[in-house]
Length: 195
Image 1 (tube, rainbow, N blue to C red):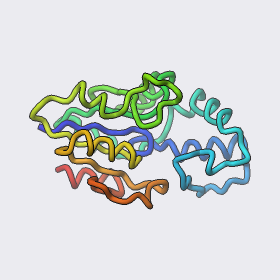
Image 2: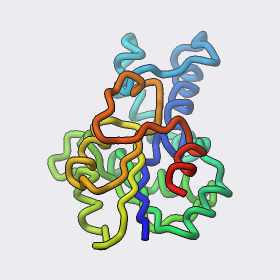
Image 3: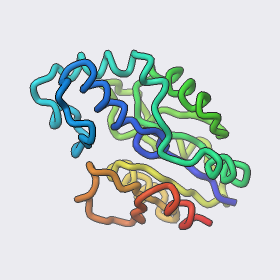
């Protein structure tokens, strides 16, 4: 049986789009409507802003609980009826309830939500994604992993060489060199790959 371990922000939910809208509404009113983040590091994009302030206001605001879907909910729930889906996303522990609320708002069916990733938010106890997968993976099941950050994909491929690891193409990862993962451009292509 397949076990799916999916990132949320930038894969399932449109974190980047919501952040850009927030920055436009609150800080840079003339930011173009079609502006697309090119870097994973927000400070690279908006050098004139106090990024800690922007981040804190964004993740603690209502908008953070209403991010738009990047996937089709029907196809998501269909695949979750066949395979267990575990969300493993890289946000601070304090935002767990906000992220749960956002996923519930879209009526997505999944097993569990876990917070983990390559960025630890200054918390030495913040787990890596492989730590979470090691705890819940059932021997004999196939690990399917989807993320938009190359560091997370690399980590999973190194820790679980037999896994199928997919990198969701986003502007911030277009230059990433392939090292054992499969690049997919969107949710539909990911579904084609795993079906």
